[in-house]
Image (tube, rainbow over all chains, first blue to last red; front, side, top):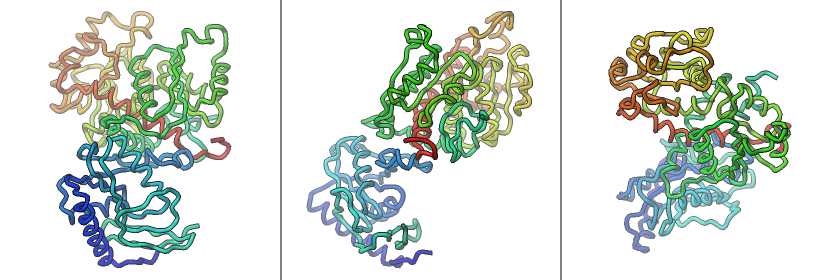
Amino acid sequence: MPEPVTEQDDIEQLIRQMADDLRTKLEAARVRDALMVGIHTGGLWVAERLHTLLSLEQPLGELDISFYRDDFSRIGMNPQVRPSRLPVSVAERHIVLVDDILHTGRTIRAAMNELFDYGRPAAITLAVLGERSGRELPIQADVVGRHFDLGEHEHVKLSGPDPLQLSIVEAP
Amino acid sequence: MRRHSLQHDSKGRLHHLLTIEGLKRQQIVDILDTAESFISVGDRQVRKVPLLRGKTVVNLFFEASTRTLTTFELAAKRLSADVLKININTSATVKGESLLDMLHNLEAMQCDMFVVRHADSGAAHLIARHVAPHVSVINAGDGSHAHPTQALLDMFTIRRWKGEFAPLTVAIVGDIKHSRVARSLIHALTTLGISELRVVAPKTLIPAAVESLGVHVIHDLDAGLRGADVVIMLRLQKERMQGAMLPSEAEYFSTYGLTEEKLALAKPDAIVMHPGPINRGVEIASPVADGPQSVILEQVSNGIAVRMAVMSMTLGRAPAEGEGA
């Protein structure tokens, strides 16, 4: 069993802090009517909590980026793909994109590509529960719950949905 | 090589789709689940996903088709593949070039998938046996043998309306003998496991030993329809019939045509399906085909998502051993 690095209470505290940061940012940018979109699966768990904390008017959207992965021809089709659901039009709307862990940046690139196929958003803000080194694309988060300093073979993994737990696992 | 294994790669994944026979229940469910995700792509501003970008799909239709050809083409385009349609009448086969020679030429042009419709049973299998290892073949209907994507889109449509398969009674009515759709439907429905599968037709349109596939043969339409959850009408394959199999179209309609009165024998929420093209007034009355219980046009739309699923799953496999990427 991987060892949890944060207790349940800590994660809920991290998410509350993220919600405060997001509220400040959205107010500063005078954003009204933002659409929050969680990336399957971990990002959606975090987004569900943020969405409640921020009392957003628009229902929560969900993205499964399987059809947009850049390693499709190498690793093939994900058999557990779920439909993406965006409850309202993204055109000219401010999107708050939520994921669990920001690592290489490829998931976020895929998610942004998919969002643009639904329309042209006014802006996208990225919020992640955890961020680690190892970026392969010029993508940074606007709101970060916690930074992780990890070795080359270490990965941080979110399990959930209830309770949410972050663990560091060794992988070759 | 055994036919069943021809469509799977060394890791048991779908390499070609030639027939429903030999597919495991979970494999069919995976295709339906993947298709479900593709449905929403049709509702977006950009009706495309980039999965098969840079891949080339060739539609080889040796037999006339509008619906199937068009939905395969739309499916490939919505996956961002490039699509080539070979018009067989003007192609080199008429100049004496063999089918396999033509295929090898197309492969030399780096095509990745052949979608094949042919009047001869086994044509897609023959092609699948001879293509390069990285190429996938989809059977879009071969003779009276199989039409697997039609059966899958029918399963998809049934699941969307009825949810679970286990409690269902399904009646397939009409020309079972000449229908590749019927054969694929029987394999799909028995693999998924339903309560009762009936085939309803005159003796002359029932193939020999069909009971061995686990179906209940009924010659009386009223008995066949009674209590059914799903009624699948088949097209009378006039062009495939030789000799006097039927008295006349009018008489066929009076005994086996689906009218509103006959449909009332099925469950009140029964759905009516037909793979098309329909012969109005031969196997189905217009008020039924256009009526509230008909899901015939929905079958056509669902065909796009199901074909997208099959194409992306067969082409979207990590290369197995011995296969170049």
